[in-house]
Amino acid sequence: MPIYTLIGPIRQLLTMRGLEAKGPLQDSQLEIITEAGIFLKDEKIHEIGSYWEIYPEAQSIGAKMETLQGDFVALPGFVDCHTHICFAGSRAKDFAMRNTGKSYLEIANSGGGIWDTVTQTRKAALEQLVKLTVKRANRHLTDGVTTIEVKSGYSLSVAEEIKMLQAIKQANSETAADLVPTCLAAHICPKDFEGSAKEYLETISEELFPILKSENLSNRIDAFIEDSAFSPQDIADYFQKTKDFGFDITVHADQFHVGGSAVAVAYGAISADHLEASSEKEIALIANSDTVAVALPGASIGLGMAFTPARKLLDSGASLAIASDWNPGSAPMGDLLMQASILGTFEKLSNAEVLAGITFRAADAIGLSDRGSIAVGKLADILLFQTSDYREITYHQGRLKPKMVFKRGVKI
Ligand SMILES: [Zn+2]
Image (cartoon, rainbow, N blue to C red; front, side, top):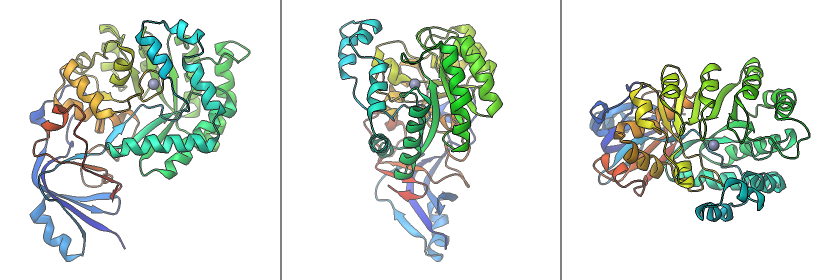
């Protein structure tokens, strides 16, 4: 027997449907249904519209009534399309050093930096990684993030990357949020690998890729193209193999230096993330492609650096998603709504652009078409904010959290 649930009456239901996948959006384009009802059948949206029109039908079939008292705004569950929440340890010491002006090298030489996280994560037992990942995912879920992409990349050997991806898979079964795993074995070249960066990537593609497929650990491959990580040429060769295996591609591109975005576009990446250093040329390249640009304001805030040129990307016609980049080094905050709201202020984004960036455009960035809007047939991932005006949400810059979260039709 299916379970029917009626949620409402909702003062403002923002469906986020019918909006362009790319380019600028204005608030006047948002579809807002007032005094709305959302009628769920199991984990999906069965019907939306006027609460009082749906009510008799819902009542006649004995639907569960989630009756709302007071003013609520409904939005689709948020999608965080770029995180690194599977890790052990803290980098508070690095953060403090960086804030006193210490360089990347000075921090690395004192035992900090990404290698510290790799050491801690390798040391952690699988169960511990599962526990840490579930805890962070559940915090995100309470904040309204119902789908979370999670990268490996803090283990950097075939066996240890498998452990991380197994931990993410297990964590997915222990949290109500949906976790989308991505293999980021090409994060940096591990310093204990005996051989060149190119040889490391060959080992990964030859030994790890078949296991990702056979054990269903990930359909997505990410790589960090940067002076301190991998060259565009090394990754171009790696992506050729990635394509042969049929993985989706995503790239850490143009964070400090340009180069990554061109590789992303050339290899048909589903998203190019960071782009803080992108100039007009890279922006045009991405805007003319199907690659979603992903801004990571949490990393800009954590590093004290410029934001991704979100306004320019949108005005050039790109699709813009916004993600938290939640990680122990540069983006420890892990508050997607706060970061997206702040980016909106600095980059002059409309509410529609900010909300699109953490709903349907973020879903596009990880290839999921079953979520990101409130429409018939979509997953019943729904947020209810206690306010009468949706503009209050970004106005409070992340302090106004959802009062209720439904994930796949279940109230969290
Ligand atoms: Zn990242």
